[in-house]
Length: 548
Image 1 (tube, rainbow, N blue to C red):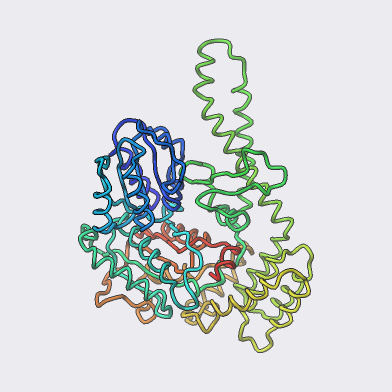
Image 2: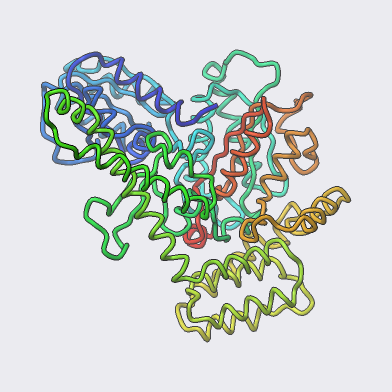
């Protein structure tokens, strides 16, 4: 189960099917994102695709010498634009691929518009999601629920994205959902309806153990998106923001023009692939090694070119050298900026207190620590609010809660009212009243012993004590111990065996900390394959904006 490979294969197939000759790739806003995370522009150029255009771009020039590969979501707007396009075609021939199921009436409308008979093909290729990593996908949707209910348009889009993922991975799953969440039940029902309606599309070869789709709600664990992260990919997203593999570095002091936006993709960047799940201390060492390796190779490249053989060797090695040079400057810049932000925002101290709030239960110590940091001018407004949010979630029903005093201190710091309002919003969203699971206190003896032993061993890293709730949920699921009473099956059938292929989807968004947990579970459980998806991939800013 590899989401990146699934979408890559669709794009490759589109290009192959259109045959030899110069081509234009015609997309919409969302399919542009879906393609850009799995294929680089230079890779597509090598396949004779010389132009990338948006279908909704008003001033496209007619280019009758080009074939058009159209990869579009099957929306009403796109069908209308395509109808107009086919009435006055700008290209010689059209290969049309929709990223999801297209209605018969829409196909009929396109056929009627194709008076000049320029359409060679209309197909469905289910790349209707963003393949972030091989085992992680996102729908790039913010604010999918209004209170405890779905926004209808977002429910439709989420159902489409999730069913497209299932079709692209060729899975017809059994479905379990979080009972305490009405949105989880609703999405489970919508996915089931599509599977029933499109039963021919979902008629895949039966496996001994059927795949499982588990639908969860972010509100069960509002803590994880609020924590600072210390592994490379998660840290970059938390402090700089990753958007379809792109990082905006334009605000970095003294940044050069060619590094204002960089791409971090494990598919095309070996250093990133090898380091994305390592912690910040290891990244620093590995960056140093990368630099030294680069310096060692550099003088050889600049030696005198005295013979044809020397020149030939230089030309052959130059692209590799240039690529390495780009990789070095990109990662040195990114790691340098992360280091600057960690120091400027006092994040080591902030993170230590966040971990104390998430993992320990000493109220007076936690309250003292939060108050101390709220009084520090080095702590940013966002980080101060984040600490108060974590405190509010952790000690919301504590007899001697210090929350009113902390809110007053937030107010005294100046700044906007927005962050103070977010504190009550986050409790309303993910507080005790809402949660279906017990986020903070493990109840059974085994869990308590495990936590006690973890404490005895001494924490390997004080900044990464926290484990997301998802890790425990999936661990129980893999062992066949996840309670049906809390996570019921949709419909009468249940799994008799332990699941092997698991798709877990978080309404309200997943995080890179959870992506790391899934990566580790896949590694430590041979025969089990887990793919994690969410309506978005969170960082604190995004989760604060979205109200999750």
